[in-house]
Image 1 (spheres, rainbow, N blue to C red):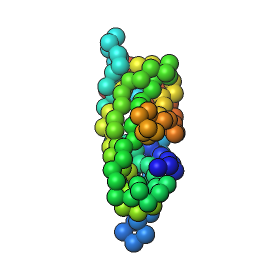
Image 2: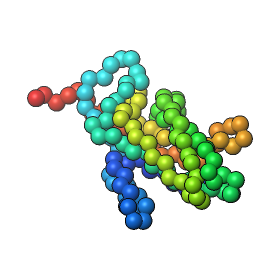
Image 3: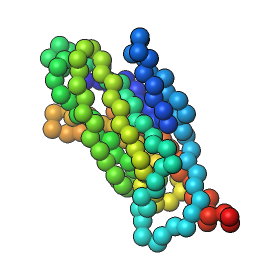
Image 4: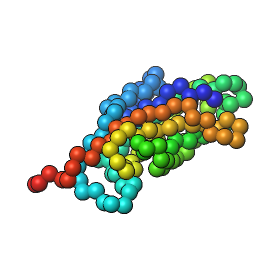
Length: 144
């Protein structure tokens, strides 16, 4: 199995004829206002879900019709792992596309958060890509 690409976006629309994805509103920065609790990570709710979309390529006939998994870790700016999730992958042909939905993100401090994508290589998880997302707290809520 080989990782081809991964993208974080607000919308993913799949064309009915070609099965090609349209990835819409790809964020590189997320800013928010509000009061911050002392206890972190804060579970930051997203006003609109983010979609985590990946494409994978099979490296042999033996992988087709087999279930594989990818592992995604969300890393804080200091490198601390804050959250993780598994993505099931099923090859019905030489390529597979996976999508996942995120309704919230962990937040500890301003900076670049990394979505580190890995897959199993033997008994170990092998990192194959990383998607950066800057998250910035801009201060308390604005007065109404």
